[in-house]
Figure (tube, rainbow, N blue to C red):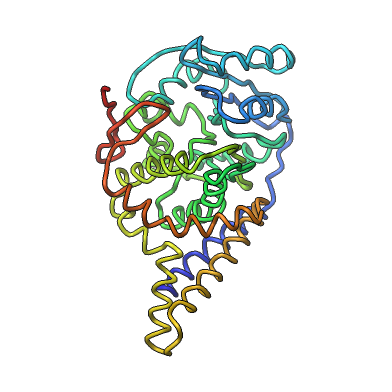
Length: 370
């Protein structure tokens, strides 16, 4: 089992290396399609102003930015107007709309801007993503006729606090690797933080509003694209999520939510997840070595964990996010992986930006009245 896990995770690391070192397809500016960037906002998270301002520096021939909030009193709305005035040459606007077609608040937030977008090529980019000037040039050329949606590996940047470094260690190792492995095993993972698609393609299965009943509208987008015999692609470079300060409690709650989403969508895959944790793989290895060769169990476990740590350190450096604090946090995260998994197993409710939801089989959700 330990050998199988090394084969699988080594393969995932190689796939990440291959993807992130591949060359971007070059297309003349006149042949690049216009893009509508949709930025759903709610509240002011750490680094939000810089995240939003980075969108105005995108180097691309033709694009528009549609920021959306569900209430004029949302504090995020106050950050937009100064940016619109600072960059009058950028086609950007703020949309305030409170439509509700289902329990998914993100989809409800996006509906108005989705309808008002003037271009067929649409990019949904979350508020905590800080983009680079070449973001669209690295992304759009791969939206070929046989591709339904392009997502991206998320690299956690600028972590602060124990929770921040734990989050970064998860995003930059386990999560990054398994995005590629999931695609190999036909379980394509679409991350809503960066989704590029054609609106005309999305309308083939009813458009954005059909995703409002699911908590993981991103995963269901990928699932629907596969039903249309279209591919899910991964961007050739990671997008950067600004983490800022994270408490341990915030990290814990976030991963309970993510885990319960995975459990509701793919329960069998969730049940076998612990078999692929580094701590469990090291346990298999130490048991085998101590039984067959009389090697000290604790030492064998430590050696194996260290080897896994080195592999994950390489993956962090590959996406340009190596730091000693992050790598030290990796050990804490690996130790608490099983307790988090058990907490996920023992419930089916999640907290999403202050509102409670109950997850139903298949990724459906319903609000819980307080």
